[in-house]
Length: 510
Image (cartoon, rainbow, N blue to C red; front, top):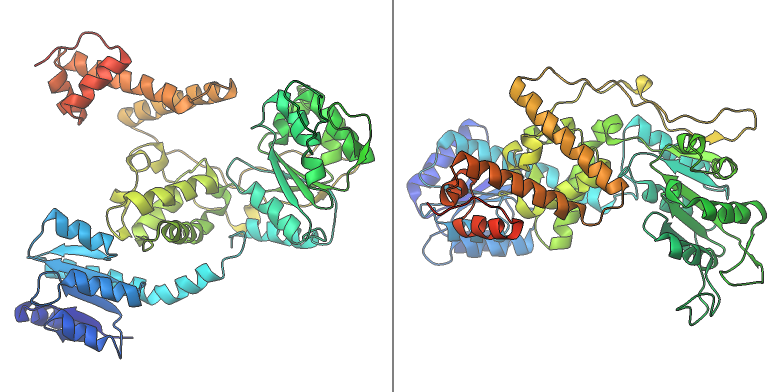
């Protein structure tokens, strides 16, 4: 292992750190200024660099910039007696691992260097892992079964139905099925049937002739024609309007279709892969989905596990998303502490992999340090329902594996596989019960608005939430808005503006 470099013009600081690290059996090398350290970088590199900011000659920030240009993965801890905001911001913008103000606690400094050392030792393996990242990540048994199914289907053109909760990665699987199929060199076309208005969906799928309807000034090829010879992925197939289901069934049955307003049949040489988060069997029973189309699509089914069923994959996915987000933003990737990663792996994350990816994007932008602790995570996770620990992960034999199932006329309708392990909720105190209650009500309201097609749901619920908070605070302060603003932790101008925007009565100046 390489030594830890200490760069500080204060000899006493160098001596104290050297002795403390020697007791930890860690080798060190010290420099009195940044120039000597830069010269030494020509022939060797440290495992971790600890540098003062304010020094004669080149500053620690200039040293940080030079080191990051040559060795972007090298952890750099900056220390200074000038614990001002500008120095902290400049240090983190420059890619510092952590910021430590003098006078510092020696044990905490050693602990911080230890963390940086662990990250440094993992850095080489991490970079290789990112470079070799496959199209779908997963080491859990449930995901390995999905990979085996994709492999078995690699030489097939059969129709596939992918099921699973929202955010589990159904489109990634569809892309993988196309990539590893005989049609890989031909187009892959995707269409979210729930995102297209009903009046336009038919034209999107099958195209239209010129003059077929108002605004159709030219002939347009639909997705079936665009995917000719390749793969057409129909996402959220469970939301397709009933009358269009009939047209889709006809294409799957005889391979022909008509453009909207057309009279000439067109032949479709397309492999269809469909996906849904809904229970199609239930929608068939309710008369919302054609049973014959269901059987036509359900030739082979792949069920993707939720993140609850593959918690052991969360660290792998989190590191990948953090590296991916950092690359997109041109910054150094954040690192999760062991405690934060363990906490993250215990969360419910109902949005599955998509929610985890969004969370990693938030961490990259908003987390204060390079190493992310539990306290750095969004408050709604650390203080809300998401913080409820999950039940222990079921052993592989108990996990409901996704499977490849062939249609059989005598077979009953396939039922969604059970969730692995029962997630138990620990008893809650009255305060926790109230919190869980209003969050549950909020989730129910959001679900109803989304199901009803309400636009701008976030804005609608956000205004109601803000209005309720401000009204309650004003009632608590007997209408004094300045006092209410202080209690809510917002500015006086902000509460004044919100009161006007939301039309709240009963406020008065303090």
